Amino acid sequence: MATPATGRPTGARANQRALQESIKRLIVDRGLTPGSPLPTEFELMEALEVSRHPLREAMKALEAVGIVDIRHGYGTYVGSVPLSALEAGLAFRGALSVRGDYADIRNLLEVREVLETGLVGRVLAAYDRIDLAALEDAVSAMERQARQGRYAPEQDWRFHETLYRPLGNDLVLDLLQVFWKVFHALDAQLPRADDTPEATASWHRAILEALRARDEAAVRSAMNEHFRGIRARVTTR
Image (cartoon, rainbow, N blue to C red; front, side):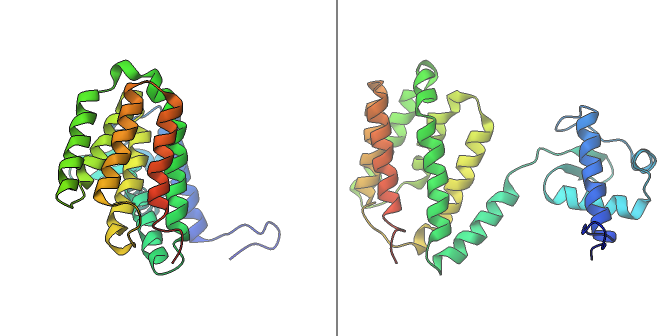
């Protein structure tokens, strides 16, 4: 429903959205951080000039996306805002894409590739903090599994997590894990191409060896080859 004068939505739904925004603004304005307790329900009702029922509705909606954490019997706290909602949405779009033209899956891979290749310079700048032994363990495990014709997805993720952990950016790791988990969940439904277990292990070995040489161009080239192999699976039907 919209008013003739403004064209803006009105009614209970618009009021709820406005109330949720007010709660988020209160959290920010008061400098509350994840884990901090929110004011009591009565205090929020007074501060926001709202009754109990719409406030509880707003809190439930904010809890669903991780902005608040309602602990029954203890109170309400600022949430950590996990990316579970993003993961669920991407997984759903990916599942639909498997039955379509793979466009959403290709888009997902493109975002991941842009993010990872764009971080190469920063990874090399943090070279002294990279756990090369852990990267070697992950690649060696992938190679051992490949010799038996098996993939090693856990080691694949371990490799990428270890590579970017020294950057100290938890959001980067959270985003990459979401992208990785969504693609991994769809893996069995996608056609195979050049990414045999041996090829997958060799792509990661090439990245590691280029990293050891501190050769930025070689690291980028190895990463591009890695993603080229993955993209080949969803380029055509």
